[in-house]
Image 1 (cartoon, rainbow over the protein chains, first blue to last red):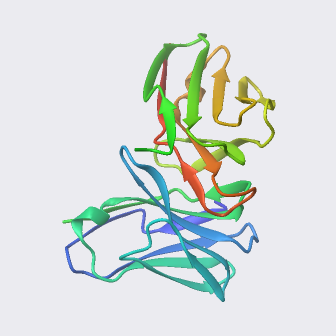
Image 2: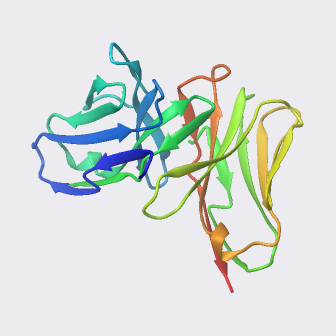
Length: 110
Length: 113
């Protein structure tokens, strides 16, 4: 089984809809991360969490919220999706010096 | 503009050839990381470099960090189809082992027989 799983793997949604992306990890690490990847812009950090009570904004947190339900679960929500949130989203866990990434969720907002 | 510039953006090589990918910053970095991304999969950690002049190798991949800690190169010797993918460099911009890594835009490598 994969160490970091993400659901769904692909999602198409409409502008204004609320959507949640989920992430689970079996690595046992406290830290978890959410990134988005866009062509020409690379990978950018959205949020990161040290534990269920410690959540921090990353580089591009506007328009997103997160929830850390347990050490192993970290979800990302788009309260009202907009087209420029179309991207590939990655969840990761680990330490700053070595992160383990999930397979990604390809989100399209029409 | 990107804080981490990678070059080239894309690379197509014949199997067996050597190649180099570069990652450059205008500022001194605290740590430099190399990851590989394959289509449909997440990023896989390759190596971390923290000291100026440091060099690390894993199988046929060697990464170096220059003395000023502003440029890193990733060298693949005798490339194979399994090396194909997107290579991304990431860096600690503010301090050692920060959670706020920045990443380059990636170099897409294709290896043909």
